[in-house]
Image 1 (tube, rainbow, N blue to C red):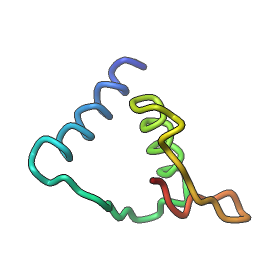
Image 2: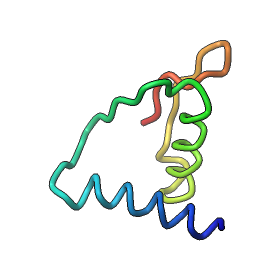
Image 3: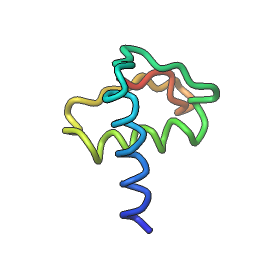
Image 4: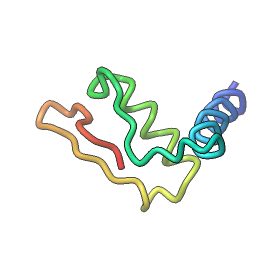
Length: 66
């Protein structure tokens, strides 16, 4: 199951990059809740974790993931 989830995220990130979208910014709804955690975890597993930075508010909700 972990491999399936990792492959799913790889497909998402590949789709964003390969299909000439080359987004610099992606806006998400409700990033502060659990969605932000999953996106952060996926990025940290796919790219060098030192290249992923975040802004988290005092309630521990994600504000931004770069």
